[in-house]
Amino acid sequence: MQVPAWVMCFVVVASLFSLSYAQVNWSTLTSDQLSQLQPSAFSNLTADQLSAIPSSSCTGFQPGQIAVFPASAFAGWKALCVSLLPDTAWNQTTAAQISQLAANASYGLTSLVVYNMPPSAAAGWTATSLHGLSMDEDHDGCNGFTSPQFAEIPLEAYPGWTAVCIISLVPDIFANMSATEFNTFSLDVYEGFNFDQIILLQDDVLLSIPLSNFRNFTKYGMVSAHQLAILVQKYGKNITDLFTNDQFEDYDGSGRYGNCINCLQFKAMIPNPLAPLYQTLPQNTTWLQLALTENVSIDSHVFQSNGFTRETVWGITAAQAPSVSSDVLQTIMSCCAVNILSDTINAFSCYQLSFLDDNAYKLNYQSITAYNSKSAECPVNSTTSTSTSPLTSSSGLSISSGSSSQTTSTSSGHMLGISQIEFGAIAIAGVFVIFGI
Image (cartoon, rainbow, N blue to C red; front, side):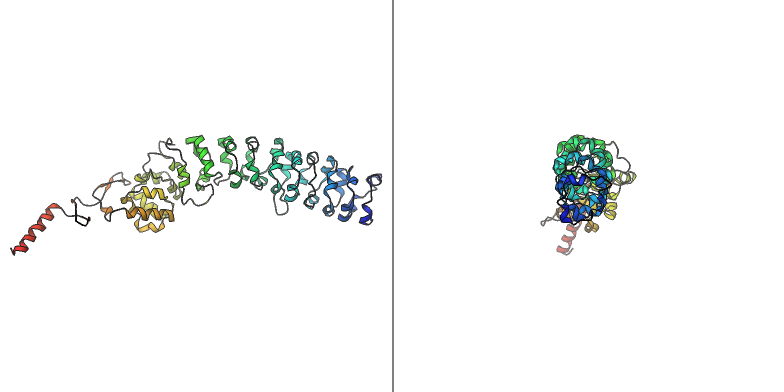
């Protein structure tokens, strides 16, 4: 069929298909010749004939030609051919045609070809064809799905989704996803979900996810602050079962993973009061578990015996602040001062703040502001107060500072550490001096 391209446009289906498959060598068609064929020439195309067309010639396919392919012909697509199709080549395809697509052919789809498919055609996706989709440098079909298309994909095809494909779906798809659709995904694809997708789920969808399924997300916090709030409201003290320790250690309270310098947004959403999670703190306590635990005294015994890490310091709440012992404060300031939250700083006593003085520069910027403000309210001799500190040492003994002398106020308001006996002696000596005795 070595004829000029302009001649090919006059070939009609009768003359073309009056020839047998052996007589019409589809393997000789060039891209230009293919593009000039009338759509009617393809109305009886077979899968074998489509497969015989050179992949390099597939750039010549036109939407009107593919629109009239018999559905059965779609089984003849090859991945390389599909990868070379013009962006709008499949914009007139039908569900019946897509239903015949083989996995090795869908692998070749590009995002633009998928994007331009009519939503109604998406009803033809099968588990087999979805499973063939991939994401690499040359094949990015998963990234082309639109929300209207996704809504048409039958639930029975969902077992074909893979994590590598899920991670590439545009986030907008999740904003309109139903609870039934989301919960039809297999647990194998959960590692493919990303933060930008999950935060768009409607509340009813999020709350429909079985509690145990959350642990199948990636290690990073996968929900927004609002979403975590409603999950806490629903599950209460079982909040620690939502995610693994690693997931929560990377959660920063706003939904993004990273350094948890200030988790106030998260702590503000914790229901109050919330029943203690444990009678005693467990081994390898996470900052979240600590934040949710009431009536705990944070002394060095608790701090060390429970395998606390520097991340655990994030969980020290304002309510727990008065129980933090001096030795624990010294340990924190030497290793992880940056993790002390500003609301915890504000709840420290002046005596506790004195243990921060030499290393206050290590605090995070929000906590430094809190430290400077709170310190300004403390008297100069706050570290030598005559009152007994409520803090306990590692031995469980109360820590007491200062002397037993009484104090009196001068006209300027400063406190002088002079006993009554010392004051009387000074007064008598003054009389002797005045009268020359």
